[in-house]
Length: 287
Image (cartoon, rainbow, N blue to C red):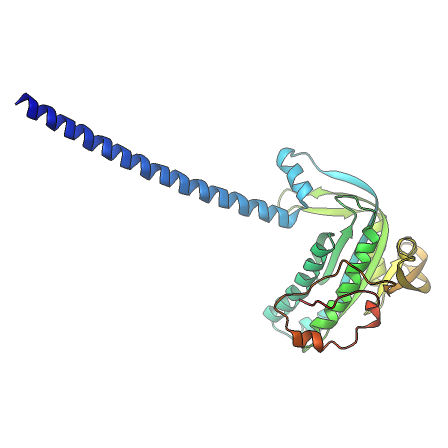
């Protein structure tokens, strides 16, 4: 009798242990699954942050909530504007408009990443990018120049099958800026300074299909790039300024840009001779 009772107790203890073990395994699985979900959510949040801010600035914000502001003595700023996009907007549906603009700016984003530049923002149908920050680099003007020439090429390529071809007007300037993060909600990493204003003026006072640069940028590019003096022009807020057209590069670049991988060989073949603006840029491999 005692033996049977003891065996029954042992079986009950064993069953309880089995249930406890099973419950423990289920809990570990749930914890593991939740951990993976939290890690995935954290990775998505960090990726969203990196889509807004440079990695160095994002890392700084995570450890210090104080305002971020840095002065850079010499960077090169580019503004690119799509000429006549307002007229195109009136002739297409909102979805077609957004898709067209997204296609163009996504291409510019890939160029920005390829040339290791920092996209600052888009303003309507204008695109702003800078070289030389937040990581200082001595070739900031050259990388911006290469990106500008590649932008011209890509617009020509994208126009092949477009019902409404577009042109871009690009302005470039080199100088000192202050860079920092502003805002609490929808904050951005932005630039301030006279150099930014002048770069914007170079774009607005330029010509469709051309790249206008200031004297300061010209001094950085004159040994390696083809530039043509435009002459002295009146620049709003600055008075008279001597400017130049950037036409191409004197020698082929080894830092080439590959366009979207889904573009066909037929697209590349249909380009024929490259525009004179691309002189010296090796862009044979097209996305």
